[in-house]
Length: 318
Ligand SMILES: [Zn+2]
Ligand SMILES: [Zn+2]
Image (cartoon, rainbow, N blue to C red; front, side, top):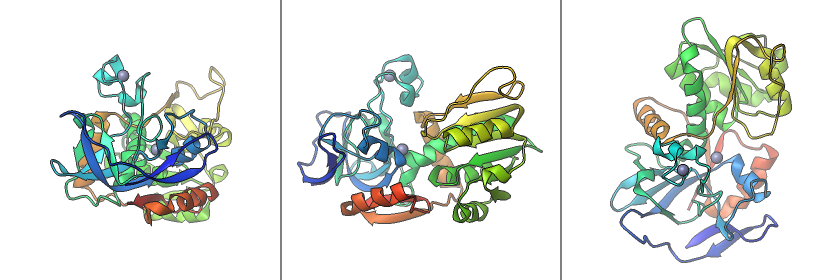
C-alpha cells in the first residue's frame, strides 16, 4: 500500500510502497483510510519541531476509515498509555507517555492504518467521511477550547475567536450552536474574515481594530502578537484560552492581566469530548471548509499550507 512517510531528519516526504498492517490481537483494528486531514502540526512534525519518532513515520492524525466490523469510523488519534490518571478519565491527549498517531506513532497518510485499541474507534454514522475527517484534530481541538469558555458565555456575553483558519472556523460555529455569546473574529486576512461572517460571526476584522472587553478570547494562533492582543481584549473575570502552537508567551500576575481573568491552554480533546462532538455533528449542520486532494499530492498540500494558500482544511484521499 501507499504510505507517505518521513525517513531521516531532512523533512523529505517519501511515497513508500509498504505492507498493509495486520491486527495482532482482538483489540486492534485495521481501517481502510477514507480521508486524512492535513493539520499544521504535520508541518511541525516535518520540520522536526516535536522530535517525532519512530522513523520511518507515516504522518497524519485526522483520520476516517472503514472496517468490515464497524463500517465507517472516526479514529481518535491522541493515543495515551491507557493506564495513567489522565488516561483513566479519557484525557489521553494529556498523557505524559502519549504516542499520538502521525506524531509519535504510525498515522493516516496511507491506504490502511493500524488502530491499537478499539476504544479509539467511533462510528461515523451518516457523516461524510472526507469532509468530516478534520473533526479528528481541528474540529476536536476547537470543541474542547469552546467547552472551556462555555460556562462564562451566558446572555449578553461576547466571545472573540483569534485566527479564522480551520480551527477558528469550527469554533465560530460551535459558539453559535452552544452559547448565547455574540461571536467576533480577529484575523488580518480579509478573505478569512469574509468566511468567518458566512459562518455566523457578527463582526470580523484585523485584531488591532477590535474593541474589548470580551468575556472569552480563544486564541487559535497563540503567537506573541495574538496573545498580547488576547490579554488586551479579555474582560475582568473573563477567560483567555491559548490553543495555537506558535510559541507566544505573556507575563502573568497582578497588573499584567485583567483582574481575575483566567488564562489557560487547551489541548486537542478527550475521548469524552470526541464522543460529544460526533453527536453534535450528527445533530447539527457543521460546515466543513474542505479541499480534497489525492494522497499522492501530500507534498503539494504541505507546500500550500506553508504559504497560507488554504481556505480551511485539506483532506487527503487515498
Ligand atoms: Zn492536528
Ligand atoms: Zn496515560
